[in-house]
Image (cartoon, rainbow, N blue to C red; front, side, top):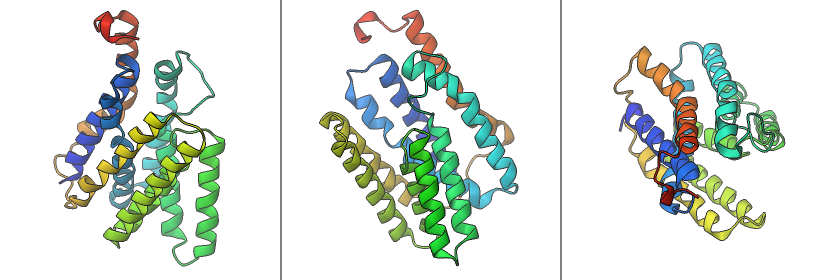
Length: 234
């Protein structure tokens, strides 16, 4: 599987996930499908780091996307222009990218690397970014995947299981805990990655970036205009 195929899969899973959240909150299948999106995006963030020609530009694009997406995310999730309850998932990916940069820079200074990773994970939790520390853990796991595929996948799976356990211990409903386990379905897809980029163009790159805020706004509009038959709405 090429990175283009993984990117398309992640995009479709994300749209299904958010459509379920916004329009079909009582249909758990939508959220189950959507759980695979975040691990796939974490893997793609690492691949982007490994192949980018301009890391600073990559970081700037991701930061800009996170900022632009915050209002659409708050509108969809909380029905407000601004909410401090949770920051959108792109911030989590950005922190994961910084963790990978630290891992690459401090590969021979493990103690300092562990401290940096812990601080980034703590930052994710204090800033209340979506998925908390999981983005940092998954990006580091997939960075290790490049050298040791089996160990990287095992670390990623362990991180997802630990995150699910943390949800259970924090009192989250058992139904959501079980849904969260569906994130593990991303691992077989990642294991089939062939290292190729696949279809690629500057326009596609822009569209993949814009897809996140635009689909959130589109779902907000659909929900507001009641385009979906009322029987499907809460």
